[in-house]
Image 1 (tube, one colour):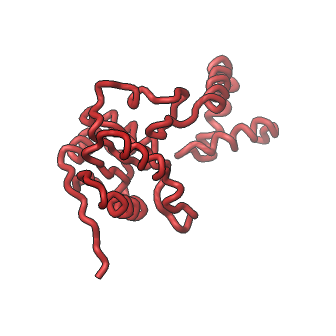
Image 2 (cartoon, helix red, strand yellow):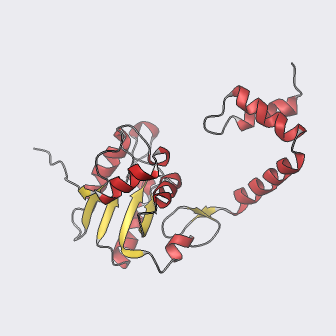
Image 3 (cartoon, one colour):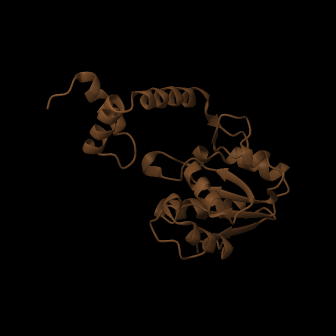
Length: 204
């Protein structure tokens, strides 16, 4: 079946979504156009608004259309505790576990020389300002248990080592090579509850 250029363009655009292959994108496109045109219009409108209005929280750098996200504004959160994650999706996963009640800082990535991502891409100047201004007593390194995530955690632990702040890492039990956003709440809860001190590898 030969589709029109515009429908084909829509299908190709939908393939940018994670886990969406050619067949899934085709089903989505035809369903939106044929079965649910009102929902498709709403999707287009909301997506347009989100692209125009959503930015990053000025404190933790998660995605929000507000200057400060709801978590950073909340007076119910533990101001002495800050959890460092790689992405807003990781932050959401930890929130959904229901066990963590501190603050966050989102790196928006990880160290990856092959991708040209160095320390300057992680927003450490902004994090340093928060550590200087806020009563932070513990930093939880919750980067993903991947090679890049472990490298990032090691770098951050060394970067924080001169401060009088406890640095901890999520407990073992997280699958090596896994990502926080795909883990169930029980696994994340146990990892948070069993976090331990982070040891820095000293070169001889």
